[in-house]
Image (cartoon, rainbow, N blue to C red; front, side):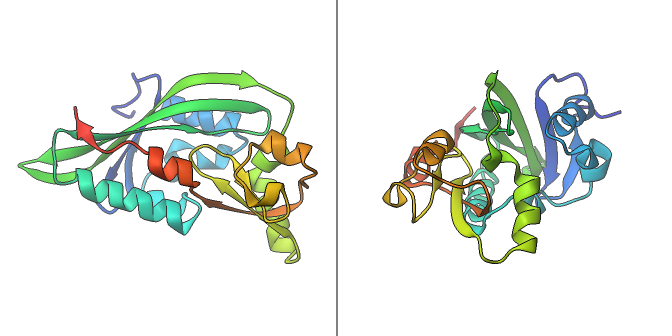
Length: 199
């Protein structure tokens, strides 16, 4: 039984290296099931490294920089509103990352994600990440599309002159579903990411 079980939102804890040491099982397992990933149950992720789940070198680097910054300040937290969509659901989430200190030494981090809004919508294939990953393994000649890991807008050199646009607008401009998807951070989100702040 996890010490995070009473918390309704998604919560997990890592050590300083990013290894997941505890997870709020009930909400985590529900979220994994809703996203068609029951293989990523709480039991399956404890002991694994957080960064093995994060797509995109730019995104991993930004999170590492954030953890490094707050690891020196016991009363700091980093807050980020972001999208975490599934093919048939839009989700707006706010994530808070706080350091865990023991005897004035940072021993890890608590990640707390709270739903801000969620709504059903017609399916969008660009958010079917399992299908796209399998497709990319089978076919090397796919159009490259980059998705911002925070706002989930997309960029393609062949659509909207390479601008960052919503998935809906991508399809309206003639975008295809069979693509090689990678993850990055758009300029707006890079600038908008909130600085760590005292709690």
